[in-house]
Length: 473
Ligand SMILES: *Cc1c(COP(=O)(O)O)cnc(C)c1O
Image (tube, rainbow, N blue to C red; front, side, top):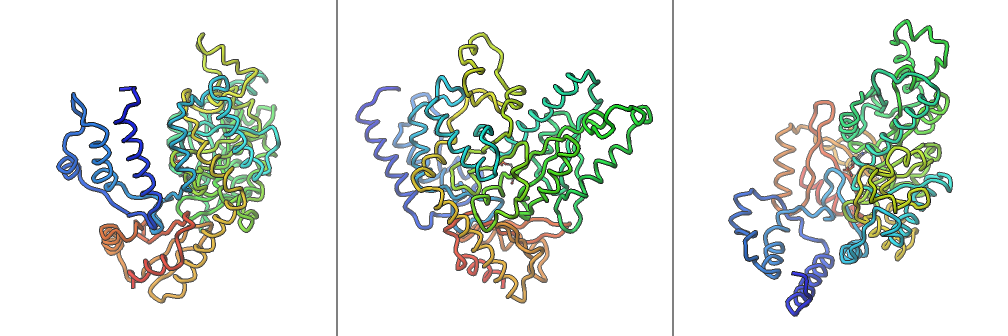
């Protein structure tokens, strides 16, 4: 199984042929789902005692399996948050796999971790965090948010313990009502409650809304606690609030919370602010969008997913802490006699900063592409997607049968087709996917089915948008 022979050499060429053809398509085929029965019939039995051989397995992947997977990087895939990895990042993903690097510790993966850290440094600099900031690439925003919240709660626990105060009966964190569903998963894992602050028409968590919600919690304290003279302003000690999560670009609409207002309230009350920028914080790299993120330099932690809008392959989320020692206190080192040699006191071990131990050096595809192309190319690519989004909004506004639900923010546009009901949107969307033309599933807003575009691919053009809108006429 492990020898390099003529068959392996032949397969190497075949795999690079496949990769080259896939990367050379302009555009790639959109492809689409199939049922288990269809796939069984077409692929046949692939797992057998004797093996079917690499050539045959590759053929089945090429001709059957890959065609039942929607291409996230198709320029008319505007669904959810799609992806648009650069060709260089994809090619380097192959190198990462071939290099067999263990990315969990400095001892084993120093070179890879060094390159990942330089990439994290670029992101921390874009946000304006101090030189001491740092973190780790985790599989996705879900793990990133959870890991940051674990660190935030541990920091509060340690503080209360040091002050000799009792732990609150329940732990909570606060976010806006439009915050991402992964935070609800995090709350479940943490066995904590979410305080989701209603954000009204704007959909934006602001400083005053946050302050009012925190005051509201303080007003619900039982009378014994109301009389406690020690630190009445201490929302952690009295109300179990260990963090506030600001969303820097909601998934549904691209709305950026009032980061400045949120961090100011949290500074006053000694609360950890985490910014969930899984999608939106990529736009820190775009000068035209930078003002939206005023206040980001003062957060305690943030995440951004390079696999969303920073042109890297799945799966990569950059998780960055202002004070990495607080994360290390929560996440590392994992206790086992055989791990002592990794010496977390002296070394930057990525596994000390998030949930998980073994890890792929998943930040390397972004590092390679960023190193090769330079950061200016990234700024320009994001500006291109923002310009395409503005063009899409203008086209929608100019068509009498269409109407924007809200002004476009970042690179998301949500709009309605006047006269259409739920079933019309679904029929339209299904037809476009079946035809291999576009992937634009509808979304729900305030009980209404509406259309939504998310543009993260610089190869999506205003002409693509026009062609899709023409199908709604
Ligand atoms: C996508 C997204 C997440 C979850 O990220 P995954 O990488 O899918 O786990 C979290 N928050 C926001 C705002 C997102 O858009």
